[in-house]
Amino acid sequence: MTIPLNPETCGVDFSPERAAAALERRFDVECIRRDFPILHKPLPNGKPLVYLDNAATTQKPRQVIGKIVECYENYNANVHRGIHALGDRVTTELESAREKVRAFIGAGDIEEIIFTAGTTASINLVAVGWGRRFLTTGDELLVNEAEHHANLVPWQQAAQATGARLKFIPLAANGTLDLTALDELLTPRTKLVALSGMSNVTGAVNPVREVAVRAKARGALVLVDAAQSAAHGGIDVRNAGIDFLAFSGHKLFGPTGVGVLYGRRELLAEMEPMQFGGNMIRRVRRESSDFADPPARFEAGTLPIVEAIGLGAAIDYVTAIGWDAIVAHERALTAQAWGQLSQLPGLKIIGPGAEQRGGIISFTVEGIHPHDMAELLDRCGVAVRAGHHCTMPLHAALHISASTRASFSLYNTSAEVDALCAAIEYARQVFRRG
Amino acid sequence: MSDDLYDEFILDHYESPYHRGHLAAPTAVHEDENPLCGDHVQIELLVDADDRVQEAWFDGHGCAISQAAASILVHEVEGKTLAELREFQARDMLDLLRVRLTASRQKCGLLSFKILKTLIYGLDERRQQSQAPAD
Image: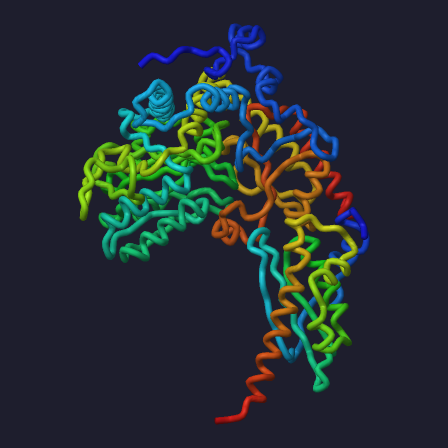
């Protein structure tokens, strides 16, 4: 399958600056920033944008935006059916994106990659397609209170529908997983362990491989919610012993509306589809039907085709920059932010030290509710998230109702960390605490 | 109407709220929350035989807007009759706050108003039940 290389949209930057950076093996953040048009547009209040809400969604480079435009302008058609030039071309592009996803997560087979609407849809597909089929009364699902609601509520529903029971890995005082009792929590009845690769609140990076090894020893499957960790690279599902992996395109510099479910071939083969209709069938009779093999079995209806192709372009983009460089840059920003924020009066950082986390720092400031904080930071052009970040059980465990979250990405700068701290100082002054 | 969300009026009510606490024997109590930001407010009313609010108190936690709004509202309703409060509309509540709220922050500013309306509805229901002829 050869696809003509389009220098404008293939995700590889051929600019002299990028070439120079690549030659010197250096990470040039100003060069990266030029790829993101939105970063150069002033806000309605005239301030420059300091975008620190990357854990909610990342901005899109022109390589991804260009790819989407390329699809619609040049080969828009439905996939897998049109016997015409556009249909062939778009199908080739879509399957090429599937292959990019496979390589990105280290899966063995392209047929283990299912395109979904996003992380939530992916986890629900497992909770219903696998969970309702295989769980029975007395089975156990091992979850934890730090998970995003998307990796907890589907398991609550699966448990309620089947008579299975939720068990929780305890949390340490800082909100990270306390794995000391993991071997006791895992029993012969444990059917699945669901955890995130990285917390969307504390930024804590979970030891997925270690959990998987111990889960495997008890015969339990492991599902990883990689919504956050996918944007920080280094996923290798086979090496880590991951059975199911879910992530979204839009947190990985790709479009909204598309996500991925990886499932081991043998598991997908046994799973029930959740949606029925076109594309997912092999043969349809009047009263009953046979279903197609994975991944088509789980891709009923028209896929988010252009979004999936855009996700492929996003993977090309980050791969060309290189994960080592991206992670090193994010670590430096996180360490700087952690150091500066922890000096601010009344500010408490949630979660572990800078070295144990990815580019996410959630915090509270005494006397200022997170919503007020976010509103005042916004006045300074600093975009953050405030609230419970879809982790109400975690906030309850930490005895707080909400927090403010700053999250960093490859295009953020050291000066933006300074801007965040200055904006927090401004908020303290407004609240007469300065 | 101020464009500054955090003007002195809001901040004064946030930092030194009116009637934050509880009544010994409230006539009606209701609480609610704004799940988006976790604002939580409880309002207690002491209503006399003439249907007039003798005292109103609130308790809760959340953003400055939600807590200041609760303080401003309990101050406003004291001395008013239930008939007057039935006429009290969301627009009046937003006017009371004296600041212009964005659509997303109106949920914070109107949480207490929603609780007040529920309280009045509950009191009306209770009265109808007590006035209904016994079978």
